Image 1 (cartoon, rainbow, N blue to C red):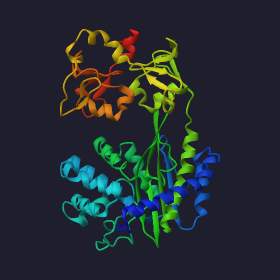
Image 2: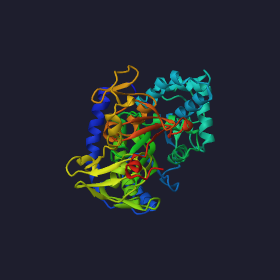
Image 3: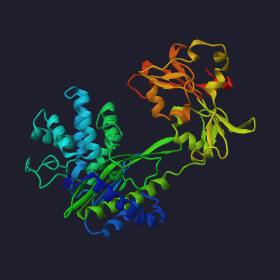
Image 4: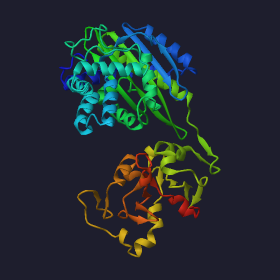
Length: 463
């Protein structure tokens, strides 16, 4: 990545101009009819790219079917900092093997993937080479070959041309190679589960201005795991490669996109990334439409409209479980029971969340226990090792605090109304709207914390 000396303030100002111009350019695309097939998307992308000065390549992979389309997808183009994905993958492998200490490299990985810092990258390449930077470059090349990226090559650490293996004229990647690796990464075929998670997390770190090109048209409800790269003018470039995930009808769907724009003004390549991404998002948005109602044969009930949208966008099956009723009327309110929650429709109360509020099942099911003064429900003093909630007088500590923060926090679960304590053979903690349960037998999986089936308990169907 050349041009690293440009100040952050100038970069941010530059980005604001680019974002503004991208929004103007992108509007006609948003209004255009989306192609109905990947082949149609390929033709639209070809028409778009062929109208621009410069050298452009795009690859798109539907990660449900693994079908890939591309325009100039096998042509080698300057990699810029997008090639750092492979360095991050090698670092993750070495952390897991024990040859690198996670605490020693986390800050460097953050700098490499977030700020695209080339000196941090140089240090990491040296580390994955066992202290030898040339060996580190070869390690990155070996990894590319192992993953099938046979037309991609690293000849030197980014912005360090004094170290040149002489095997190519520049660090090079292809769009098809990159999408192949992204697909393997997403499906867990490139790295172990832990290393996959580590690399994907690092790909959420690019700063807002870096994301606003290809990531600009994406709705806030999507997640974009990516690594952009750029080269300063006169032979400018803007690349970005990543995985877009989105929720549809209770499922997580995804696609991989690699966009390479070079031999043009950096600002133009940045701008055009928005247009490419808009076309691609329009295709996936139309190909996997939202249902207005979804029937769950597991329980024989349907979820529709705002309740379905809320269920999908706030954790779906893992957080709320299956529906246990259809929509019902209680006390003049439209409600629906799920295994772990009760949805309530309150018109005008929460317009950003489909006017859905969660019932206070935790409060309702413990009212007698709290009135009786059971010890876990009595207020306590703050524990410095935890987060203390003065409104209810309770602490929130490990292992529950990470789950609370990661899956909705106060809006979903409410305040803690008990301390953590032993119940039914598990460590549990009650919240206004939920009960958390610690399952150490699931250590190393996303299911070490599960939600109690308070909806089922309220309905008297708890097993």
